[in-house]
Length: 520
Image (cartoon, rainbow, N blue to C red):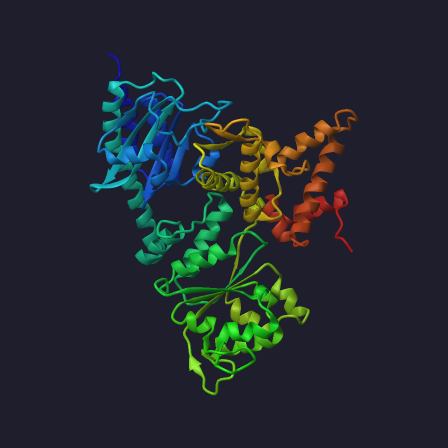
């Protein structure tokens, strides 16, 4: 007796409903079962968040797809799929652009999708998201596939519901229902600006935001330039009981010394030359909410003393005013400096430092986040696709390898600008407006010096004309890698060992053997 392919695909999913699985694994199994039922080149599970579809899991699509955010207003096919209660197959000559054109993994060139099938998922009779299937073969799907997809979608909805309920129970077990809601906000379900990533370092950051966000503690956000400290401050505010009140931002580095106090505390009319009217300061504007002080390390010492007084007493005095007034503000400060070192050097007040860093929060650099670079690239690619009015923008395999190999001294901000420039270069180099714009490594114009595993191949190729013994080549590579890592962490051995994934004592012994020395 021939096995029913629908039953063969559904039975493992039914078994999974009663098992505790990580959400990513549960969704991976779901898509694998779908591809087994309906063989195709690519499948995706997308969750509906307002007017945007967010990919949760993909198979057969480029890695950057997970970082893309598909606005329904810009993608008529996805809009059409959600408009139907059941499955929809688009005609092979359909003029509506496909959001996955050029993104099918493993296929070179400007290959568009030729056969497209999709079905909405409903959870508790509310639209939750979409399942999409795509093929480069124009005759992949037929009538029977629509019926099978309808049956599969019902179980997929049950899988989604089980996953969300299990996650909710796990969160409540950790810190009751409120923490679960906080985490949802942090993960981007209720925020306009999203923290994107799936790496262990990024998940650890989200967990810390969920932990401290719901408190009243002042937070000192540290990290290199361009890592997204302002987005972290927004996430902390959104996760707090103050989220319905304003989040006011002030860049301390952009203020002339003579205007710092006025910006922070306000002034009365006639307080100084040019003060023609009363003005409320940032503390008053943030009353009941949060105040984000970016580049706090740039604040002059005189202003630091007055800021400390407000943090201690909750009272401020406008410049030129006689009376004090009380404010209730949570301060979120950010810096790319080592404030502890600034304190030791006498450039920052120790008492203010301790007031601000009640909860220190380190934002990881992009080079510490692995393949998150591709997810973020996908997010920026989709932004540029819409801005340039293109059908789709994709990264070639070589471009993806270049992004993963680069060290990202400018972090996420550098990646954002790089993708924007590369899209313009690729467009300028096309003789006519392309259906699918491909960005290659040449458009990225990244330095030839690479890092990580790719560098091994690069060095080996460069030295092919002058071969060296294997041990010497490995030692040279290890010395370079360890030196770069130690320099990034200012020779903090524990931090370097964590990044390299080895024991601190072993790292010190290896560095000693290789002759890695701290610069004088």
